[in-house]
Image (cartoon, rainbow, N blue to C red; front, side, top):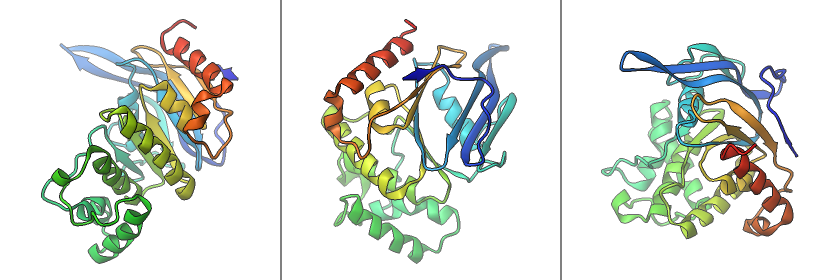
Length: 263
């Protein structure tokens, strides 16, 4: 069942990420351009949630705010109870942004190095994850020698290994072909189940949001507001087979209508 989001949700003691009455605007030709308006939500520890909506609804801006790269004009955002968010979230942008002169392994440890983890300790932790990610044997490969899907796995491992209580994913599979995208969606589900970390995903793909998430937030056109919150009732663990279930099809239809502004 879908339920309308409340602007003033009560903050749980177990919440990892909260936003209350968040407004954000930019200047365009000297005039304010509202991007986000009165956005409020609460994400519990270990939850996987997604934000969907039309282009220009402020989804990527919201991730920048959550990461502490920007501050809201009004309202309050916290991660683990603190408004000092910078460094508390690991952020994976739309492009993999791998450094071409560094090996796959050295790209994966970059976040840990920035946080002061000794290089050899970081490389040891990353090697263990390469086996889990299906990248064993490619540790020394440069990004140019990797397929698009493999590059995205390295970028995801860099995000996973970067110290932080929350992972922020901005359209991580948007540039991939449909087969590779499906494979990585399943891989991401298995990784999240193994890590039990809090994940916030921004995507244009309603099907992807339903497949991966515990809860989906639907945003309006600019200025972006949360118009609907959909609790995903699909059992876990999930696989791509769930895409054919009646509940999935009904939920997808309801979310598409909401994104299109039909409800």
